[in-house]
Length: 528
Image: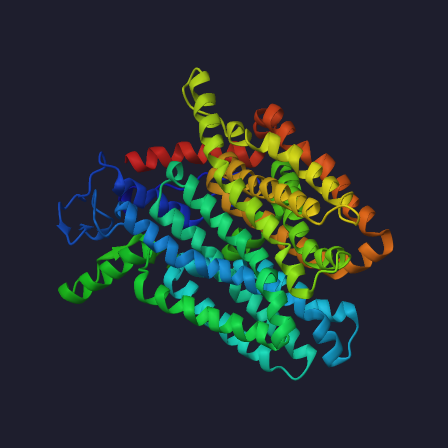
């Protein structure tokens, strides 16, 4: 799409722009990747991958991240995702240090839990700033810079003389730890929408494993060396993972790469007219447009879109239970005489469940292809992405009730650990279908919907961290865990409701209808 042919994006009628500047840019880049699209402007000039004065990738351009060899893509992912994993380790590793913090600083039990919760609140707010920065200035500086600051905050936490300072630096750490979540943008940079299944699946797996890895080794570390070394090891881990990332991972954001190419052409030729669309769009960002796109639209969708709201609630409860278990597992397995370190090892059951849930994606691929073959169009619907979520949704409350009523002697300790494993399977599946179905339903508005769901997820996780101990002591261990199962019962129906009534719900959605109009507009724009 040449600049002179740009139209004006249609409006949704909601008082909210229905396309972001980045979405216009994406349409432009996709047009250049399309072999049927011309890469020449009306002057017929083509220099160094820049078509005329307007920069795009040429077809099959080797510098285009979408055209990287498959091995190179996975190499980048395997150097990037460990940073996300470690950020989640840091979110949970503190759980076994809270008691020692309470005793050292002579504070109440709830106050000692605040550093755990505040990190998750930082998780919730960080993407508001860091996600658009990664879009504008690239994944590499945002992820690298975020991990650097995260590592420095761990040093501050390890040396803190007061619990209030610990809380402040835990929040700062959580805020910048959220920068590692932009690695899912790295996935989108290198794979098209229909190719992202396994990479996104692995992205989710790394996040989940990180959340339970913290207590697995944190219990022993706190027991042997004290709570300060939890942060010492966290900081060392940041440094160890950051170095290979900085050395071996390139920038993958297409617009940033094209902007650099245009800048080099301007330097070489002295012609200031060379530019990339990314530069033009970035210069048009205003504070009000950023607020609208990053805050107003996600909240609007959360409050008005049933799909976004109910899946946000399910996703929030699902994720919160992992952090509830960080408080509940030590209480429950203490009944079996487990030491602090052994209590952390009990999370291995959930970790194995996450791995099994990841492998279950093979079944979803089979279900999805079979569903597509049965449809007259030969294409699967968004609801077909929910197929593995139907048994996964049932397993969610079943595993929680199983855990609740077997987590006490004389029942052997392996039984509640197995229940935790089955929860891990359902948890991973539900995490995937929430994002997968949301993206399929809202397409170019999916980022706003996912942002709303992420906000609810992190806020619920942090809030429950502060009340879990009181809940388990007040209700008793069995009934407190049963309460989670009772909450899961109505949530388990959500995948079934959306599977059968999703098309009707989407047809009544103003956002989904507007999205369909924009998709049509984009198709025509790219053809031009």
